[in-house]
Every structure is written in C-alpha cells, then in structure tokens.
Length: 287
Image 1 (tube, rainbow, N blue to C red):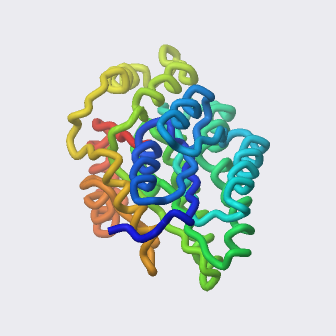
Image 2 (cartoon, rainbow, N blue to C red; image 1 turned 135 degrees about the vertical axis):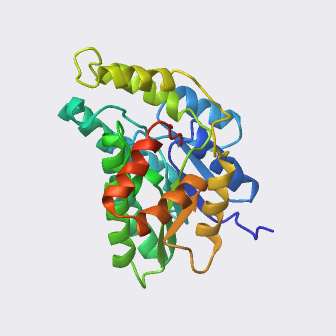
C-alpha cells in the first residue's frame, strides 16, 4: 500500500510514450503529484487531457529546461521531491558512420540535457534536506552492442556521472539511483529507425549489407520479442527508489540485464565480446 504521497512532487521527462508514460501513470495512481513532461506540444496537450500536470520540456534546450522547472516550482511553492530522468532516444549506426554532429545530438538529449536539469534541481533538494534522483539508464550502459555506439556512449557517460554524483551527495539526504532496463515495450525502435534513416548514409557505408538487416529489424514492430516487458516493470523499481529508506544504487530490469550483468562479472572481455556479437542480432527497446 502506498502512503500519503500527495505532498511529493515528482518530475518525469520523456512522458510521450513507453517508460515515461507508464511511470507517470503509476506514480499518479499512488498519489504522487506527477509533473509529466514532453518535448512536443501535441504530447503535452494529450498528457494534460489525461489528467497530468503536463509541462513542455525539451532536453536539448537549456531555456526550455529552465522554463519547465520554473513553472513546476511556481505550482509547488518551490518544492520537488523526486526527479526521474528518462527522456532519450537511440541513434543506430556503426561508429565510423556517425558524424560528430549526429553524435553530439545524441549526447544533447541523452546526457547534457539530463545534467542541466539535475544541476538545476539539486539546489532545491539541498534546501529541503532531501530528494530522490533516478536516472533511467540501460543494459547498454554497462555492455556494448554493435551498431549502437552513440547510444552506448551516452549511457556509459550517464552511468559514470551518476555513480560520481551518488558518492558526492552521500550524507546530504539526496539519494541517487540508476535503473538499467533491457527490452521494454515502447516507441523506442520506431524512433531509432527514423534517426537511422535521417543520419546514416547506408549505401556508401562499408557496413551496408549489415545495415539492410538492421533496417529490416527496425522497420518491423514486434511486441512479442523475447524477454520484452511492459513499462510497469520499470515502475516497480522507480517506486522502490522513491519510497525505500535505503534505495539501491542500481536496479536491473528484465532477464537480459540480469544475464549480461552476471556475464560481465565472470567472463573475460574476449568471451564477453563473443556473447555480445550474438546478442547484436536482437534489438533493445526502452523509453
């Protein structure tokens, strides 16, 4: 049973679909005051129609981040209990086919935007003497798969920054947790396919034959993929991170995350590479 959470405001990024939408709905049902944010006006309007306190927030835009947080603080009287950084996308493509602007765009949303928002939230939580920061990373934040170099790099960066932040905030009353999902039902694959078509020169790449197989997977929506879970699987971990007196530093979600976490500990790098090359035939879906 949930306690009285009505005085606990939680800001969630990336609520247009998938994990963000599921977690927003789940926390609202538990009585939290949920501020559901999205980048597009149409998604913000839809979230508002569904009963959320909806805010427009574009992680690529520092002014948008500031305006969104100012709006929230005006409504809550300057208080914020929790932040769930979730908004992200995946940019497929081999490392050698990623131009610097494409890689930079991946980091603007998946890394720098999260950092900007978190640094703006921290003074609020310090004044309160408490708070929860939850970062939705990925299984690809601690193992790498082919054709996901940009996404891998952004999630590895989030993991390193978050581990450091957690240690720096020890004793402050602000708890920091990572969630590491594997495949989750969402529009992640659909969005990744659009990024792939927009930013990768398939025909002139040395990987073009492999790309045709990648493109076939990205273009085919398969909600029954092995080990894929609903967003509620992430919700359970977010609830624990928000409500436990001692939230975990890391939360694994889905069988692939548990399996690869174990293999990473026991296998040599060469043997792990062999396993991951095989796993690259699958496709990760998340936010």
